Length: 303
Image 1 (tube, rainbow, N blue to C red):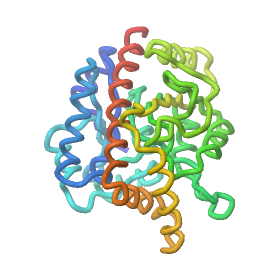
Image 2: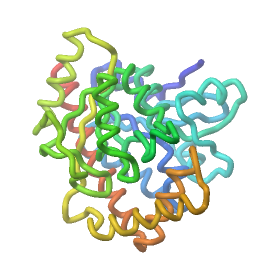
Image 3: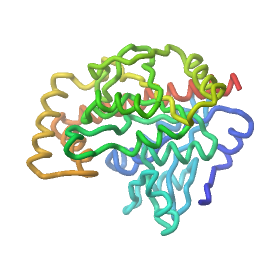
């Protein structure tokens, strides 16, 4: 697989400057046009404001790219037929010359291969509700269990089975810490209702854990930094509970299964909260991107 790293990102890595990986699924599949391109540019600008270099990741014409130029970013945002690629899809996309936006698992893998240590996203995938029946679990978890990267996120998507996901991360040996909180965030919500075992309060503390991972030389697993959406920007918890319950019932009634469940539920939440869930999602992503840039700077300063 030929991995193309942009000149800016390559130079930053070579000179020890901070770099933050950004996924592209939110651009191609998570937002309507033209807002998706506006948000993509906004997130890259937020990384730069904190003194880091953004590395948005995607696959274009069979070539995995770490760091996109203006035209490439526009392609991901506007081109029809952009696929959604997990890490399992990468060899297929490369071999067939396909173009696709990368999910958490694909972004984390490509970032790590390029030498980028910090990655910002919205919410992770995880264990789906009714797992005992469906055996449905996101590929994110297994990939993060064997990829040395720090992921700044707002927890896992609240449509999932949060306690089962936390248990699965523990089983897989993936470290999880709340950032400035003892509670695990719930993506749209500041608090999922579940605690975390570890808390980190500064970018320097996060960077210290990253260095300790390397010194210990244990399994090549990720560090999850769970950064809650600000309470004044979260989705109203009462609205969240009501609409999510409605969405789950509608999903069952429609017979939606497998990979169709997450987009069905997220779309239902957006439509039945009058867009409030989307705004909470974006608030979380903005906060995660800024924090990731500060973590990357602290990491670069200590190397």
